[in-house]
Length: 147
Image (cartoon, rainbow, N blue to C red; front, side, top):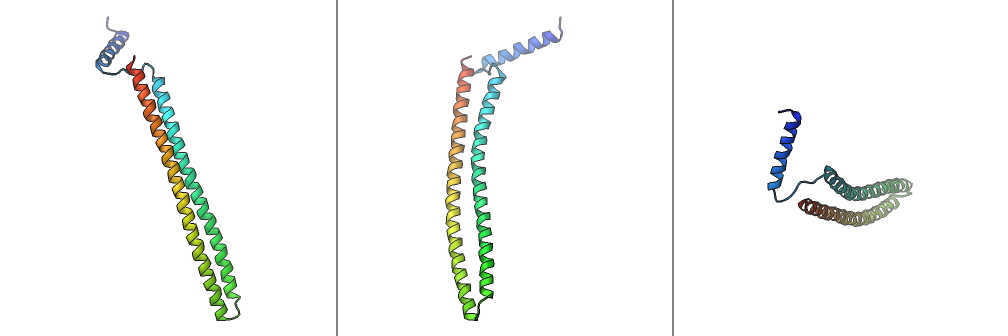
């Protein structure tokens, strides 16, 4: 009798024969595979979150600095325009240029430090996620091989 049930049993037997010839075994339960994938995804998501958190910090710092520089530039313009003589205006302009240059150099140093810290944190998180994935995959393969 060749019915659907017989066909399914025949297909299952053929699959089992193929798996029997391989040097490893398929996971007995798809839940094992799904748990491994979920766990790996969670670790790599944490690594991505670390990078995005750092990028947020970097962007917030740049916005804060830009706002500060706009305020300083406006104040310098008011000061220069209120000077009594051209020499006084030029002196105020030079003072502003000096302080702005120092501020930009200081900000560049700060941004490089933040970027270096972000890179280090991101690399460490990605390395940890990759190690976890490698170890979890190895354990899953070893578990499947014992079946």
